[in-house]
Image (cartoon, rainbow, N blue to C red; front, side):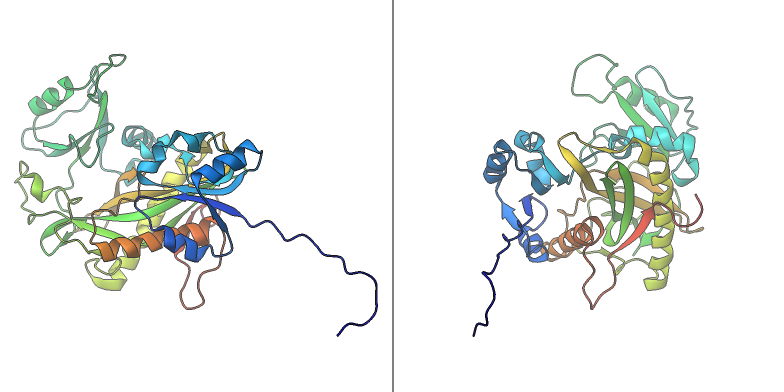
Length: 357
């Protein structure tokens, strides 16, 4: 039925926001389901858009696709990569925190081929040696004497000399009373999302993560046995946080709040150094933070922050679950979508910190 009146005027449909997703570790279909109102484009389509002067609204990449050089020529509104070497380079982060916030990391020394940073090790006193750029624990060893320290230092590459060897390393005091799970040393990996929007940095900690435990039972004093130390290898492939944290939900809540406080401190000191790359107007990154806990005091120590969430080592079902955790964090915290009506928000803001600054 009609009625009178003049000719109807039609408005052109609003342009659907575009997203380029290139995943290795995450699940693209999960993001498709979350962003059902967005238009997904391929890298080839995104390049064509760029040549015509149109920006892709959102670029989310991970894994092997990070090295695709086409991504760094594409102008975009928001990209899942930030210039945050101060956070993800373990040497630079420890050098900063040992000066600005030594209370959140084990005592440490930043070492190069010319300097031990005044490190002195008494015989039998365990320390962890981690070279710069080590991948999946490459080069990580336990050092228990000054002689071993000098041997490790000699393997560092002098500054200005080209080669594959690391030029720097961080030496940290070993936490000899770690929280255990079924007798095994554990660490907790939580996901820390940092956003740079119009030059302003904000950050949050996701409420779910994973628990890594070493293959062999912890034996204090067996410092030469890396299977009691290396909790990245995951003796079991489906430990998650908070579900499997020792002590149950209440203990997990205490741990999480302390970890959030640690990352508030990290954010306070690193936010001035974080920025978007030139090709993106705004940017974010999802980082994997490793924590350990002193079993006697409950103190939470930051071990390192990794540029990948790193859940590939889990069983397939757990990979799917944690992929959804990461993508929900992007959906809710980065893009500002509300959480589903049947569940709470998936993140806790850590920066800007609540209360007076």
